Length: 273
Image (cartoon, rainbow, N blue to C red):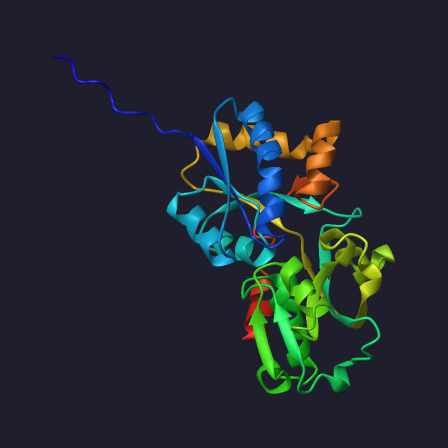
């Protein structure tokens, strides 16, 4: 009697997404992304949303994900361990962004009046949603643990902004274009909560950091890496690709990521400790 061969793996390429824009949005776009990657690689693809930034990095390093769309600090962490970042997003013609501390419109909060307020961060590994604003506050002599009456981690930008909007927090941070673009924090708010740019007001802007990128696992075959890289860099050349860039990656195109281009973020991470 012949023994049947073992079942092949259901998926041959796994792509991970962060929870930063909210699980619902990411899962809604996952099918579009899997279709795009399947067409580029010629193999079945599974797209999943990680529970946290830390889980996203661990999935990539452990081989549970072959590539991920990663926030800058996750890129910095895995890059330092030998992982290559293939491409990074370009927004408004720029490959960097900043963060803005915001409050409810009309609150009148300033850097000097933050004492005793409540803040909703995104994730401890979120550059725009935690690391940049915390480093900024410390540089201004505002130790968060002493300044805020309460600090919570909401898990996504959407949840953090909604906590402020709903009164569960007084302050949050949001990614936004660099100063050179002439755009403001409201542009970042509109990406996460369409139509709500005017519902928040600015407290302060932080320094800039590199945009999110796509690191690829060290176990992925070089020919597959090449196919994925070409597909990402050419994504803006089709209408479907442009929609995917806008709706999932909040970018207008991808560009090649310079080798070790995220190393400067360790200074930001250390400053936020």
